[in-house]
Image 1 (cartoon, one colour):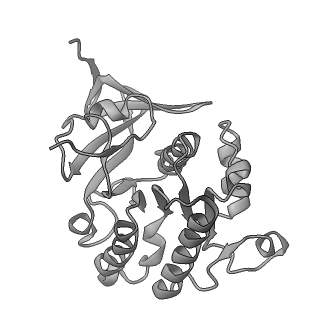
Image 2 (cartoon, rainbow, N blue to C red):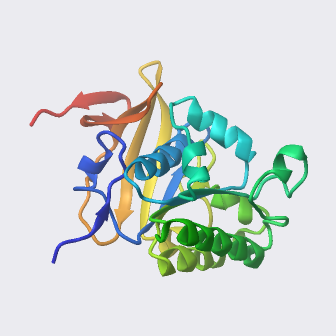
Length: 256
C-alpha cells in the first residue's frame, strides 16, 4: 500500500523522510532559541501554497504582521494567497489589541482558552473551504508550548485536543515546541506520545563554531533517517544536508 505523503519542500529534508511526511501526521518541531523552528514551519507552509495547497498558520508568540514580514524577508509573500482565500493567519498573540490587530480576519481574544482557539481554527478552515472548495492541507501552530507553559501538567491533553482538530480535517502539520538550550526533552510532559512525529532542531558549538543540526526522533507510518544532519539558514530559507552527519564535535561527510 502506497503511503500518501506531504512534501516539506525544504531542500534535503524529504530525502531524510523517504519522500515526505505521511498525510495527517502531526509533527512536533522542537528546539531551543535560534534553531530555526519558525522559519522551518513557514517554509513548509509557503511551499504548499505554491503547489496550490491551502494552509493555516496559528501564531501565539508573534504579531501576525511580523510573521508576514519575516516570511517576506525570504521571498515568501503570503498576501496574494490570503486575498484568494487559500491561506489564513490566526492571531493568537494580540488579543485584538492595536490598530493592526483590528485588521486581522481571525483573532483569538483569549488563546489560553483552548476551546475558543479551536473554534477560531475551525472558522478559518471553513472560510478557506468556502473560498477555494478545498480543505487546508497544511497547518502550523507556533508555538504550542505557549498554551501550557504555566500548566505543564495539561500539556498532553492540549496537544491531543488540537491534534484531533487537525487530523479530523485531514491537515498535516507542525506544532512548534520550545525547549531550553540544555533540555533533553521535547517541550512538555507527555507531548512526545501525543504526536505522530518529532523533529528536533539544535544549535551547538562544534570545534569553536556554532552549527545547526536536526534529527528525526520518530515519524509514525514511515521509515526515516536516524542520523543527526547539519542544516543552514540561507536568504532563501533552510537547506538540510543529507550528506553531512554531525557527531557531537565534528561533521563527517557521508559518501554514497
